[in-house]
Image 1 (spheres, rainbow, N blue to C red):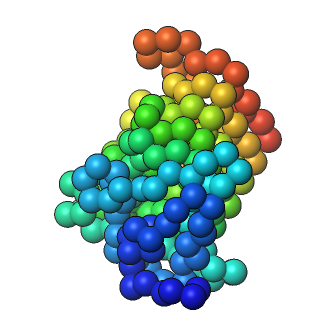
Image 2: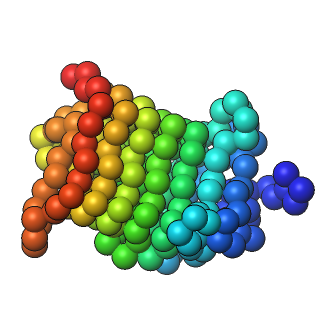
Length: 193
């Protein structure tokens, strides 16, 4: 709160390991596609980068289609140790996922958030190892049986305490693409068709 910025991207641009960017109430028309329109700094073990709503304020990130090629609200490619906490991520104007975590990013945590309106694909695509998807509301994902709430082929992940509804495919799909994913924990999630 000591150095306010007009955009979330500007706040992210000032971050280093261990920093927290608190986002104030509002709807932000931004997308974050690593390698295209933003460079995420990486955190470290015990010092993650955290992007969180401020106190109990409601923060919605809802980009327009022209941002980040209209693909996703957030795409991580190489950043590690990042936590998203308490955000509403709305892909109503996007073509694919709400969030995708590529295999080059590890230790990404999404918690206490709402992820919704990924009509063209999965709400969360998780390829990066050691990811945690915790206590989120995940809703309105996909338009075919191949689109899921959470789709992962990563190792050592935790998917816990989520409420998942309105999904065209499975609530959670662990898929072996070129190898079999191992050591994933999926527990205490609730699914409503």
